[in-house]
Length: 279
Image (cartoon, rainbow, N blue to C red; front, side, top):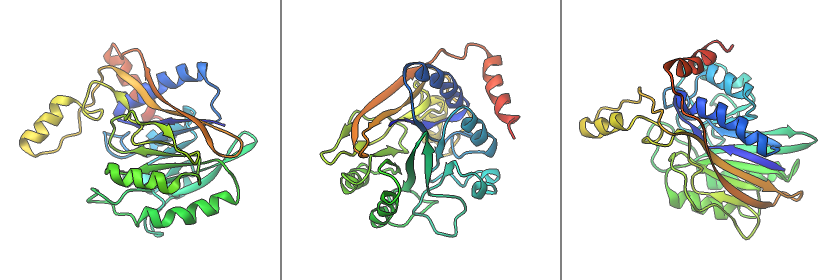
């Protein structure tokens, strides 16, 4: 099975880069399943319902959200009905939505789950993901050997510890959240593919996909501002995971698919308008 993980989509530029980059990647690869980090799609933080529907229609099978996943009320109200959007599994059972699911990938099944780290998140708190991990994996193994986890965490040490805890028990654990692609992709000795962070989809010439000047002002003034998208050097980042029939990863390859810049204002507005009309 060949799985594409699209790194966190940031803002309208991220949606644009996804749309263009996915077309180019599909010409060269026959993906069986596509997962995308969607925690920063709408305004740089969170995911709106219309964005979720639009990205799913572009061909993404699963959208994964993290600590920002409950920032947009219109999505929260529909999470229980949107089986292709996964919020962290290690949140309270009373939280809306799904943290893990088993999906069809052609004639096969693939299990996907999102876990939230415990370090550095002040607004959303999850239970210990290391304690949940063996229970989650045991349940998945009853139905399929193909298992991919999105570990949305800030601390590198926390990510690395979970990677080794999961080694040999799942196909891949993909680190997300920091929006900076790391160069440590590898397949561990037990057959689990890992990367500390898959990166971001959107502007490569930015601060986490957001306009650099705005972020500089945030550090100077202490007032956060995520309102201005960055559009320079748009690209789709992520990883491609090749998984054998026994669920062990054969390889993990980093992706940086540069796309043509959105030259005119009309191009950017077209992306925004196409999202707003989705129902």
